[in-house]
Structure formats: C-alpha cells, structure tokens
Amino acid sequence: MPRKSITPDTDLEQMSILDADGALDTDLEPDIAAETLLELHHTMLLARRFDERLLNLQRQGRIGTFPPCKGHEAAHLGAAAHLRPTDWMVPSFRELAALLWRGASLEQMLVFNNGFNEGGALPPDARTLPMAVPVGSQMLHAVGLAWAAQYRRTDEVVMTFFGDGATSEGDFHEAMNFAAVYQVPLVFVCQNNHWAISIPLHKQTRTPTLAQKALAYGMPGMQVDGNDLLSVYVAAGEAMARARGGGGPTLIECVTYRLIMHTTADDPTKYRSEEEVKAWLARDPLPRFQNYLKNKGVLADADLSAIEADIENRIQAAVTRAEARMAQPHDPLLMFEHLHAERPAELERQRRELADELDVAAKGATDG
Image 1 (cartoon, rainbow, N blue to C red):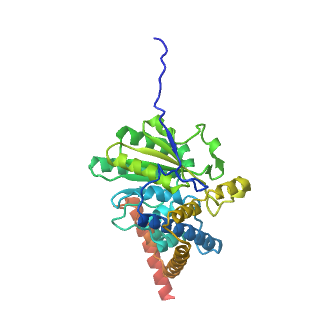
Image 2: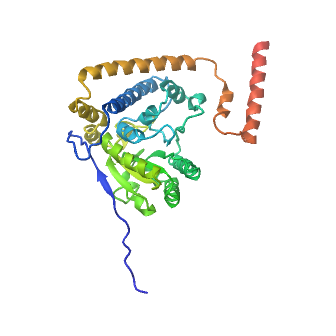
Image 3: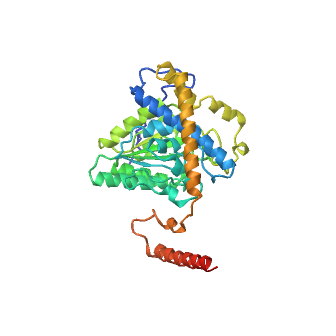
C-alpha cells in the first residue's frame, strides 16, 4: 500500500478585542448591557481588593497560605459570566473572581483559608464545587458532571478552570478525550499564565499554543487574550452555546499572567525576571477594563471612588465576622462532614474513635 497524506483539522483561532493600549475592535465588541458591565467591573475590583487584603492577612499570620489571583480576573469573569444558576462550575484553586461572581461568601473564604473545615461547606443547592488543590484532578469531576447532564437530558453546561501546568497532567488528557468522545456539554477554560509554579511553559510542551491540543481530541479550540474580558466573554459565549446546543466540548486557552506569587509560600523572584513582570503589569486586566468602561461613558471617576469605599467596607465587615466566628469553639468532628453522601465505614470508625476521645477529654476537664 502506498503512503497517503492525512490532513488533520487545523482550524484554530486567536482573538483579541481590547488590547493593552485600549484599541478596540468594534466589529468583535460584544453587546453587553451597561448594568452587566458594571456588575462585572464591581466583581473584578472586589476580587482584586479582597486578594490584596488576603495577602496582608496572611503576612500578619491571620490566615494560612493561599493562592493570589491578581492578573487572572478577566479570564475568570469573561467565562463565568455565561453560567446560569443551573450550570456547574468546577474550579481549580485560583478562581477567586469567578467564585465571587457565583455568589461565594467573603466570610466563608476567610474561614476556609484559615484552615477551618466548615469553610468548605456548600449550600445544598450549590452548583459550584470546592476548590481543587491537586493539579488537574477537578477536570475529571467536571466531565462526570457533564456526562450526567447529558444522560439526564438537561440543558446544564459545565465549566472547569485549570492552569497551563494542568495540561501536563494525565487527568487533562483523560478528561479531554472522554469529553470529546461522548460530546458532553463542557467548556474547558485554561488559564495559561506561562508558569507552572516555577516551570516555564516552554519546558512543559512543544506546541506553540495550548489551544491546539483540542484538535488532537476532535473538539474546537481557541486562544484568546486572557487579560481582555471582552475576548474571553465572546469565546466563552460561543463555547457555552455550542455545548448547550449539543455540539460538545470546547477548549479555551486564556493567555494571561499571575502578577505576583503562585501561592504565599512561593518566591517568584527566584525564577522569573523583574522585566517580565513589568511587561505584564502594563497589560493588567483591571485598568484596561476600567478605561474601556470610562470611554463608553458607563463608569466615571466619581463612581469609582464610591465603589472602592463600598468594597473596602464590605471586606472589613467580612474580616470582622470571620475572625469572630473563628474565635468560637470549634468542633473537630466537622472534618468528617461534606465529603460523602454516605460516609464510608472506615471514616465512620475514625469519627467514632475521635468522638470517644473528645468525650474523655471533656469529662477529664470537667472532673479537674
């Protein structure tokens, strides 16, 4: 048999609508209501200021280690803005802005980041999974949710977030393959911030983009400017509509950058240059989006001052409530809750043992 050339589908798009210099492609500009634009801006600013406050609290020893999201806010919100209350969001560990958009409590996040198990408790009707620290593991959960939605013939769509480092994990490839084979309603949102902690992107993959990995699995892929909320919004809107209409999954690569450390246990000066960080600071998504809103006449400087003051008060109130809550007696047995619908026998045995030890300790304290 002769050799035959196989021409794979290589249809891949790259999109930027609002660049770092404020240039706007009006042909691609999405039609977003002014009310929604302001809500997106408020959430982006709240995420940035809360992120900064969390860093201060961590440095003061008032909360534990946490992963800052500074620089990722546009990728979070442009994607999550399309989720309906009935849709599922499956985060990794850096999606603060998306979590706030989905209604997460500042107080709850403070409690969680201080190591209290009840901080991870979810309301019974929640459609947002807790953060997943193991890199890439949450994508498999997202595929399972999407397969269940398809099986039940609902119109639910699942969106999962992950970083460039997760694309080096086997979980990523398993999730992509299963999602494509079964054409489940799932949107993969990759936040390519160029660093898997200290490992640069060029040491993780030989491909010039991460979006093109979608082609190997037979699903659409797109690369967008992840610091441009408008680009992410358009790409995510197309992907959500495709998924909801039975068109299967999509991979969106949001090219972005984390402007500070990976987590508060990390020192990024050890592996990346000051020049690189300064170059990306010039592409900061927050002032870019604010300038866009001002140019449209949707936001004024006077409005911004009032919003900043309101956010500062809201954050301080949440800190006060959280610290008062954490000062109350803590029930260690809560560590066994919110993990399983039906607790496995081994965990139930451990729970009983701990409960017995706590009873003994309490009686000893009373007798003493």
